[in-house]
Image 1 (cartoon, helix red, strand yellow):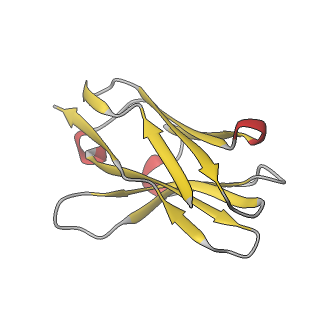
Image 2 (cartoon, helix red, strand yellow):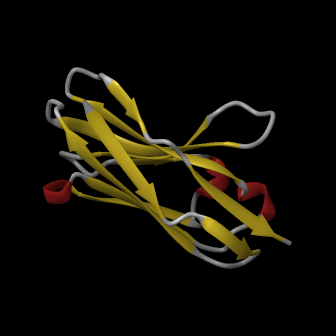
Amino acid sequence: QVQLVESGGGLVQAGGSLRLSCAASGNFFSIYAMGWYRQAPGKQRDLVATIITSSSTTNYADSVKGRFTIARDNAKNTVYLQMANLKPEDTAVYYCNVRDIYHASYWGQGTQVTVSS
């Protein structure tokens, strides 16, 4: 059983900041990558940012480059998403994702981020 516990979502005005956290626990093989995805109402779930835990190589969606920063704490099996200069179009449910070294994928329950204009 793998648990991903997300926190940090909420309501913020445009231009504001939020920090999301996701802690992984349970029985899984070594983590290969951690990341964040988001899903707005009526839309598909899209990648926001990922980080490979061994190399810290990161990947960002073009829409968030320069505004969002992903980081991880390997000792705590935790991934963070620092979001700055938020825009109304960033409003979505944000999901944490973890992939182990065999590429089994696990998802968090999602946390709502709402950006008001």
